[in-house]
Amino acid sequence: MHASDDGAPHGAAAPTAGGARPAPPARSAWLTGPMRRLLLAGAVDWLGTGLLLAASVVYFTKIVGLSAPAVGTGLAVAGVVAMTAALPVGALADRFGPRRVLIGLYLVRAAATLGYLAVSDWWGLVAAAAFRLLGDQATSPLVQSLAAEVATGSDRVRLMAVYRVVVNVAVTVSTPLAGYAIGVGTFPAFAVLLVGNAVAFLATTGVLLRLPPPRPAPRPDGPGTVRVLRDGRLLGLTALDCLLSLWQPLLSLAMPLWVVERTGAPRFTVGVLYAVNTALCILVQVPAGRLSAAPRAAARSYAVVAVLLVATCALFGAAGATDGAFTVVLLAAAVLALTAAEVLQVGASWTLSFALAPEALRSQYLSAFGLGRTAARTLLGPLALTAVVTAPGARGWLLAGAVLAAVAALVPPLLRRFLSATEPRPPGGARA
Image (cartoon, rainbow, N blue to C red):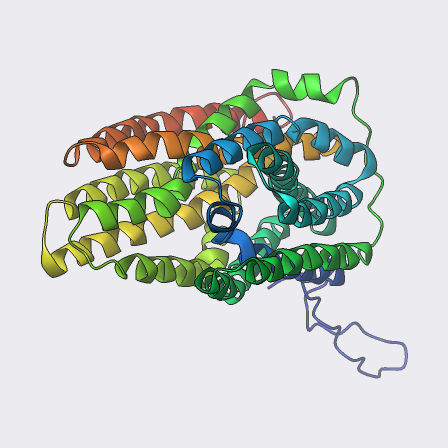
């Protein structure tokens, strides 16, 4: 039985002087108005962002006329430039509040997206993409920081899980429009996507402006960035999260290349596997978040994630050595294992990063922590997994599985040290 705010059980009527039976108190809903507005902001954001997820590279190659290697190099350079801004942006959010800085980031993203319309060469791509990627990469940790302001306790992770479901639904709705523009293949068609994405970012700022002003937060003692960079727990957890975030390039890069180039499965299998992954994320992200709601549970989830990624590598490798329907079965099993790793990893990362970040430096800590996932998606993953897919036979998958097995062995002792450092000591000095 849950207790109400005053400690009385729900449904128990308090006595009154006149003996009249008062109306039972209303059961408080966990999803408050500010939480709903944050979810609405995520929906509007990703309805726009989904328009370009699959179309931006095609735009730069087919419309602007850059080569695929030039686009890849330009986006990598822009991504590195954007990553260097993570901590300064986090510091601004700790000083002025994540809501204000998020509004500024959405304005930057809108301007950079419209700037794509004027790109005509490689340098223009790097300049526009650097601002766009800066906004993209900095937004996610600040959304998490804002969630910590509008929710408390375990509701923070629950809110982030619902937010991710909303994001997946929004992307599912908007991505087909990108496919239409790719099919038409004209500048006006892509211009509609770019302008639509920019308008969505501007609309998101309107939603964020309706959020209540933040609660007063304690100011950090001394230079916060120095403290962030010297925190060994943060750096170690970020490195671990980077390796466990390899599910992202496994899904977006390695899986489609492997299916098309190295297996006998029909090419449409790629789309089916993506659809299975998206549908499962929508259905199970919230329940998976409950499994990692406490730091110790999140630590166990990290260990399970590492094992699931090892299984994913083994299943993908085996699919390349089989034929017919059995190949499709192995690929489906690999994506199921990968999806389980995905939903557990993101839920556990929210819990552990919330537990690690001090309130006065929350945005900087979360921004630094988010660099691990960014590095996995944009740097480590593309370099390592391209080599995995192009290696002879299943050797690449065997090597990747061996590395992840080593990570799986290291997760428990590393997280035991993390938990022992973050859990408070009870009176008397002994740990609970």
